[in-house]
Amino acid sequence: MQSPETPAAKLPPQHAPLDQFPVVAGELQIGGQPLSRLADRVGRTPFYAYDRRQLSARVQSLRTALPAGIELHYAMKANPMPALVAHMAGLVDGIDVASGGELQVALDAGADPREISFAGPGKSELELRQALAAGILINIESFREVGLLARLCGETGYAARVAVRVNPDFELKSSGMKMGGGPKQFGVDAEQVPELLKAIGDAGLGFEGFHLFAGSQNLKPEAIIEAQQKSFELAVRLAEAAPAPVRVLNLGGGFGIPYFPGEQRLDLTLIGENLAALQARAHALLPQARLVIELGRYLVGEAGLYVCRVVDRKVSRGQVYLVTDGGLHHHLAASGNFGQVIRKNYPVAIGNRMGGETEAGVSVVGPLCTPLDLLGERMALAQAQPGDLVVVFQSGAYGVTASPQNFLSHPAAAEVLV
Ligand SMILES: *Cc1c(COP(=O)(O)O)cnc(C)c1O
Image (cartoon, rainbow, N blue to C red; front, top):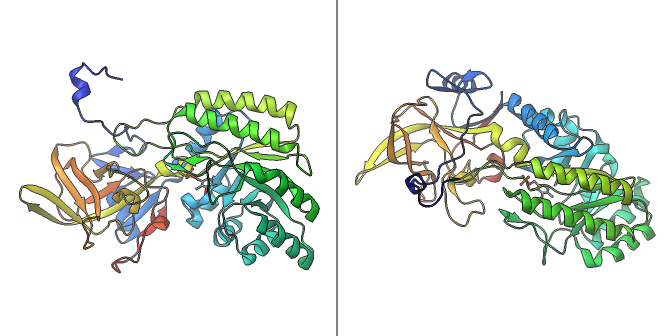
């Protein structure tokens, strides 16, 4: 950290170093291949590329940082590409799905149904029937789901495996997205959980534990630790009213990745120490419980790139615009329109001209007829010409499936796992 007096502090904040993709002879390498060769292999731009070695390395480093015995789940809404989910299913201890469609992909990917859990408000009768038939864990989010599951079990003879998703009486501080605390559509308010647990017992559903998810995209270890502590305390209190011992306690996740200038990678040291302490307490207070952490973007976000090609280079009243064949219709988050309050630049580079001279004040835009179609605003980039490849880093999560692909009827983005 620079003190405010030093001249260096006057420099604008920089992106965290993105050294996960090596550069050889001025060209970015993905999965060991030069970017332009990969573009030829894919056969078209724009595309998303995900690097399997990086996915594996991330899970490995996380397991090293967290105590043994903490189970790692992949929340697949971050990136549901089937090949990627299949790769992740072989690395993590479970997959968290949020729809019947995601359940299908997880099962096709070879995930063990015993290790799949299903959360989300408004589950349809059809989705609950699919989940029962698959034998996965259903995170109950309302009284309605209890009644519906009881009826479906009666009709089908399938046994229900359920956990209660609790809307906690606290929130995850400094989160990109808050998903618990106060009034929320997610889970059942902690105050109502004892009554819900009674209904679950009366209905004869197989109670297995609790699920708490307070928020997302957090880069502050102390905030994550506080939420995990409070989640644990709350689960211990609620367990007193449970119809069966707690066998799974999903403490949520919320681990963030650095997207914007000035953001740093999350330090897991203290989080790991805290989880070890919680494990020891769980051993005494909830002796049958496995502790689970569920992560989406932290596992896959940094392993992915979005790649598009420069179509035109224009200068408007002195300002350079690189017009590309990609944009917000494929990557809403990089355009600043996926939940951001203030638009900031994702890390962007000219992937076939790395490490050379840069020109300042360059904006990267897409082909859509809207000023919102902006991938980079007034950035320092290598001098690019039509044909060059623009890459947006940190794009492995909430990319193609979180973007309005049909907006303006341009072709869809391709996706490859390399
Ligand atoms: C979206 C979601 C996640 C994943 O969030 P990330 O920020 O991608 O880690 C995890 N759990 C639940 C319940 C979610 O809804």
